[in-house]
Image (cartoon, rainbow, N blue to C red; front, top):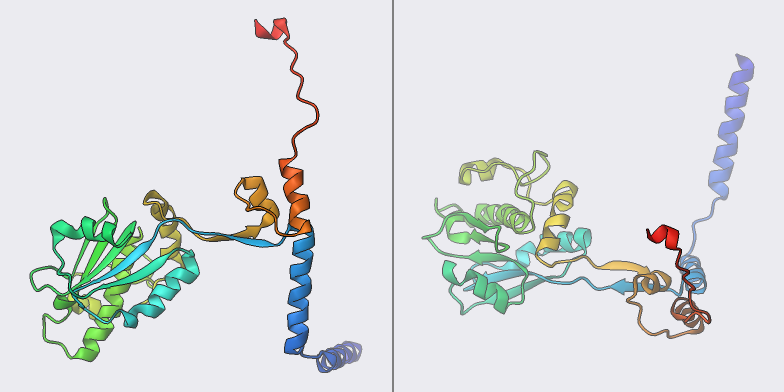
Amino acid sequence: MKNLFFVAACLSAVCLVNAAEKKELTQEEKAAMRAAAEKRIMEKSGGRLMLPGKGKVAIINCGGAYDTDRFLSIIDQVDDNLHINVETVDLKDRKFALVDAKKIMEECGGNVAVFIVDDPALPLSLHAPETGWALMNVAALRADKAEEGLVKIRARKMFARVLSLALGSPFSPNPASPMQTVTGLASLDKMPVDRLNVFDFNNMIDGLGKFGVTQRRQTTYKRACVEGWAPAPTNTFQKAIWDAYHEVPSKGIEIKYDPKKGE
């Protein structure tokens, strides 16, 4: 037993010495390591390229219904997780009408849209899954004459909900998701979540593609050549890769006809 304690003490001492000797890298050293890694990728695969995403999600604020800057953290969360194009459009002089929803969405260049409106005649939210838009009504958030602080909290929750609806994730059984059953302002106030989570984003990816929205994707120049969308080379490493994938064979493929196989 004494020997075991002695071995344990020795191991602990070694760990403490190693921890003390481990030096924290400086910013210059970290930058040098990153540069070396990028150099290896350039030499091996021609460097990195970004394939732009197609389509756009438009956040359309009709008639200045609400300050959309309060939703920036949720919009950034979507961009960070889905890598799609999201744009906020303020139409301060445009009154929303249901019959014009698709027209407004197309004018703003959105494949998918979230409308923010202030109309006492409309419900808390609306969703048109066939045409790819959802609506959040600020007037309904103030229907019980709540204090503005509570309205702000409700607005964040509802924005997350209608954004999830528009992007193709209408419900989640996960308690960490805002996509729970909501029957009115009382149940909305009880819901503690005002941000989307990974389960919501996983549900959105397939649905977005149906409306022509695709994700941005980082890859290598070599992979872009394989996929057929690489731009013209700009250095010797890329030129060598380009030539390897675009070289015309010096001898054509010879195909011999076998009558027995043709029967």
